[in-house]
Image 1 (cartoon, rainbow, N blue to C red):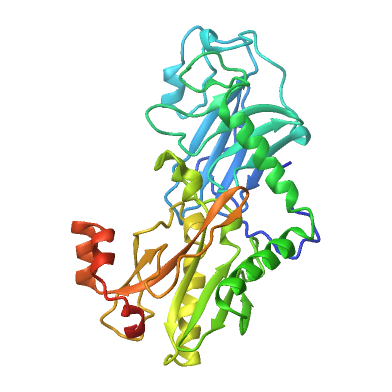
Image 2: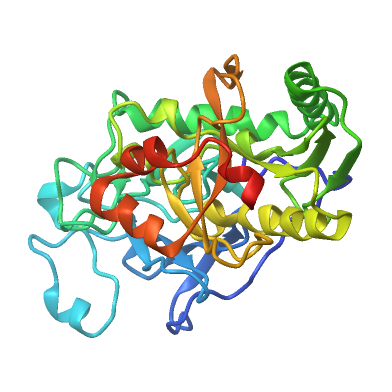
Length: 371
């Protein structure tokens, strides 16, 4: 399946059309689809020679155009037509890298579909149930474009996509993920389980409100009052893995699912708490809108503290005022509840120079009370 979100789903997708900045007039556009984040557009184009699969990022983000050759429609040349490439024309794949050097028949628009990674930064092209090509998140680096089942070896326009490639299973899992959203019970079931987990740790919530603006994916934020403080936490971020952590860790499953939280003093007014909740809400979509990630020890600009000397938030899995929490899981991965702790500009520099662990060890345990 593609997005696999039914028409009557209560959350709408935010779509930005026409990310493609180059002229496509001479080509036949077979498919156009925007990812669930609304910030990358998939395009499948056919020339008289070949079919290509493209990903275009929104102008609002840094996402260079990615492309991969899908198939030739005419007999393959012996060498790459560099001259045509210099004129901006998509070339045919050379014969030594073609499974069918004689060329294949054109593709039909009505049988093509795209499956996106849950992160939104990679996509696979299918012809009905047949996998044709994959553009993974690391496409575009060091001459690598993507994978194609019609390619043989490591060609200049694509690499061979064999059944043993781990991405085949990853995109099969991605298709299963999107199918789950067809169930009207998927979000309510997750929502209830996550809320129960938080209330078991901190007590009953007093405020619950949606922070998704009616758009997919659904997200919420709760506030749990305690004797001398209030606990605030998002609900819903962990439904999607964070982008690009695969290239940062040998065990990305340990860091890719997060929720965000903060502990605020009882002395804060309701308006001050709402202001910080708005800040958390704004941060909640950042990893997927800009293809970045939040992790233990990161520092993030934050002007929502009441005390103006605190300019940033130190993001940490261990809050000095809270006991260690039992691990919650989503899709088999641990969910990291990352807490914001106020720090000054000088303390942020200390984290840069000596590491966040050093900073955390030297912060007073009551720092959150001065926020």
